[in-house]
Amino acid sequence: MTHILVAITGASGSIYGLRLVEELLRAKYRVTLLVTRAGMDVLRYETGLKWSGTTSERQVLMRDYFDGNQSLLHYDADDLFAPVASGSSAPDAMVVAPCSMGSAARMAAGISDNLVERVADVMLKERRELVLVPRETPFNQLHLENLLRLARAGAHILPAMPAFYQRPQTMEDLIDFVVGKILDSLRLEHKLFERWGEG
Image (cartoon, rainbow, N blue to C red; front, top):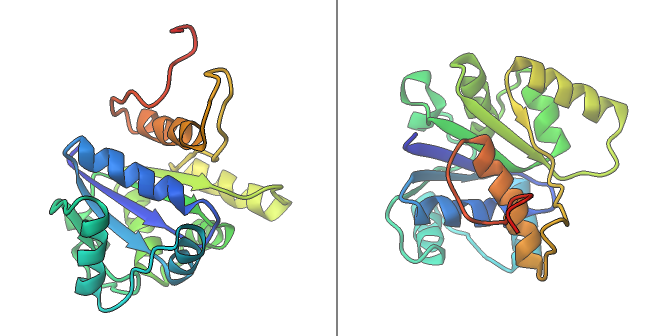
């Protein structure tokens, strides 16, 4: 697995996507970062990051945030002509963190109105890893039915639910637990949290 796409949609919890990208780049993976319009609004509100301008200008800002890492690619969320929109250039895996319930509903219905939804559709049709990290509570029946439909289609549903058996001391510990579980789902090694029975 060399190319992983991370998408941030309009749910709360954009820090999960940012921390995941940071860890993937540290481990030398090629990463594409997509942020929907709503995801950009939430990201700005929750983190203060102002990634604006043209697509190439945003890519420079994103790379600067991740210590100038040139392995990070970025496409506009509406660019359905981006290489990752095609099954012949699909990433090895995709993680949507956080995944809004609106995005999940459109993915479950097979709608591809933006690049995030299109790549998710590609991942399912090509039988590649698709991990969705919903950050919503409580779930209503429609949420649950959409997530079940996606799971049956091959997606991994990994809600942002931190554990406490590792006795977290900071907010970063809670974030790293969820990011570590995402990496576990992708079968990628990490040391973001102490596993049960190790302490």
